[in-house]
Length: 439
Image 1: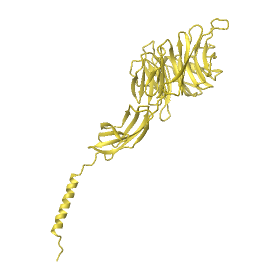
Image 2 (image 1 turned 180 degrees about the vertical axis):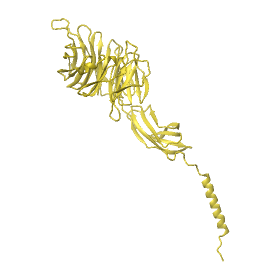
Image 3 (image 1 turned 135 degrees about the vertical axis):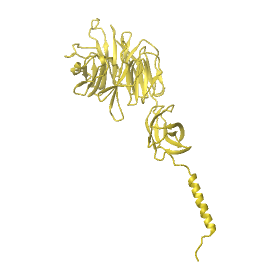
Image 4 (image 1 turned 90 degrees about the vertical axis):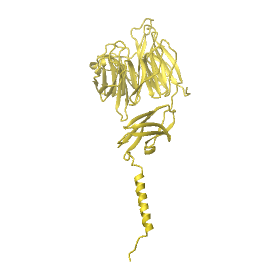
C-alpha cells in the first residue's frame, strides 16, 4: 500500500506557494542607482563659505540629491546628472561643520556618500594703529612702491626732492627711504650702469626676497640690491618693449616683470626670457600664486587710463599666456591671488573671482590702485582720495575719511601693512600695525 500525502498538507503547500508568488510579484522594483556611488569632497572654506564637490560614478539617470549639514537635511537638488560644485554661504566663522550627500529615490535613502568635516576660517582684526610720514621739501615727490621685510625693515621707492646743504634744490632726488622700526632714512641708491646712464634714477618698483636680496627697477633696467649696494642687471634691457611697472617672484631665480607695451619678461636666476603677452597695452601689475600641485600661476591686469586699449587679465602658466575670463569694460590696475581658486582685482571698482565666478565688491566709487593680502580673510585695497579698505573675512571696512592722499601701492605681511603714495607734492607712507583686540 503506497503512502499518500494528506489533503490538508497539499492545501497548505499550495497556499504557501501562492503567498510566495504573491510576495515576489508585489516586492519593490530594484533601485535604478544600484551601481551608482556618490562622494563628497571639501575643496575649501572661507570664514562664511564652504565649497564642496559632489561626484558620481556609474550614474545612469538623473538623481534627486539631499545635502545634509551636521546630520540634518540642508539643501535639495532635483534631477542632478553630473558632478557638481556646491557653495554654501552664511556660515559662522571658526566653526566645524560636517556634510554628506544622499540620493533619494521614492522617498527613501538610496545611496549615501561619505561624510566630510570642514572648519571655516576665523576672521582677522580691523583694529590697526596707524602712523603717517611725509617726505620732500621742493618740487613734487612721490613714493611708488613698498616692500616689507619685517616691521623693523621696510623699503619704499620713488623720487624724493630735498634741499642741499646750501638750501638749494638738490638736482639728484633720493630714490628710496628705509624704515628701521623707529625712523625713516632717505637713501640714494646708485643706479648708473652701461644700460642706465642716470646715476640716481627715480625707482618705480621694488620686490624683496630677503633683507639682502631685493629687486629694484627704474622702469628701464633691473638692479639687485643687498641693502647697501646695487648690482645692475642689463640682461633684460634688449627685451623691453616699454617701461617696467611691477615685479613679482617666488624667488630670485623666478622673477616676473611687467610693463608698458605689453612687456613681460622672466628671470630664471641666470638669464632673462621674453614672454609674448599678445597685447601692446599697459600691464599694470603682476602677482603669482600656486595651484594644488605646486605649479605657479601668474596674473597680470591689463588696461590704460589714457587709451581705450585692452581691458583684460592675463594668466601665465609654464611661460604660456592666455586670458583669464574677464568681459567687463572696466580698467584694472592691480591683482592679487590666494591659491588657484581666489583672485581679487581692482581699478575702476573692485571684484573677486571665487572658483571661476565673478562678483563685484560693494565699495565706494573711487579709483582703486592696489590690492594685496595675507589670505582671503585679510585683504587691503588702497586708492585715490586716501581710500583704504580692509576685508576681515566677513566684511569690508573703509578706514579713514576722504582726503588729498593718493595711494599707489599697498603691501601686507602678517600684522603689518604699508601704503605708499603722494600727497600735495609730498611722498607719503602709512604704516599700520594690527592690534590684538578685534573690532
